[in-house]
Image (cartoon, rainbow, N blue to C red; front, side):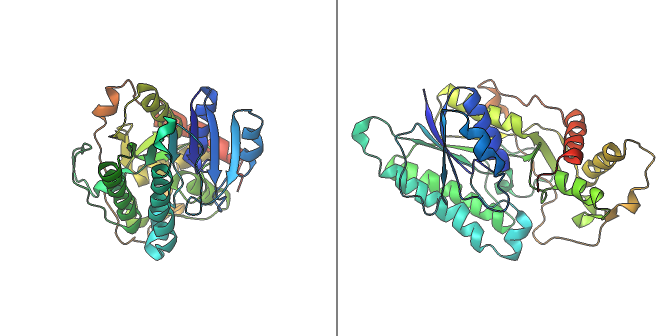
Length: 317
């Protein structure tokens, strides 16, 4: 039975990964500092599983790792807009925290036969703006905002520790994730929240940025398949290859929310804000991960109907 440490286990993607690994019979030590975006109700839910243990801790302050097979690092500050306002917490969580995990792995005694692999969540944003086409894992990193720059820095740091100290790693770079129980600062739940409160939906840059959408269940499946394959010291782009403009995503949510399609969208949209460091489009090639048997299964247009209905009936924040 594999033992994995999952940091950020109460966060959006972290919860999907934790649930999938427990379902597959893994032992999981969930680590989370329990920020504003944490789903605290999951502590009790997961603790009913004998294979789950919870530790409330900041990865920057973590001082010990158990003898485990993987450290899956999903803990991160992830709101790009907040990083533009003040990147102090992003430096701590997204870079200093990663350095601390590397140090803890390095300190594990070699003679016990277990050297954890650092399985780190990066982002497609490290490649920067991609006007057309898709970039593979060997492409130049060209981040455009503080969040993406710190993610890129962490990727480079991890690879340098592999070369210098022999720390094994996996880096994955997923596209925009969506699903149930996402904190309402991201586009899908934020849009539903605005509709519920009768507020206009703020779309920066006229809603023109293009994003690729990936269900968090598919992301969790990618994690499992990578672990199951036994590969290490590799980078994987994770993408559904389904992309659309943000304004089109919001229109689909509005249509689903009101269950009709004869809507004057101007009544619900606010285009008054333009964001600094805004990338128009990201595009990643995911042929590499397909070679180990993974591909996205969830279809955005059908899943978004279920997700909007979920948020309408159950907003946990």
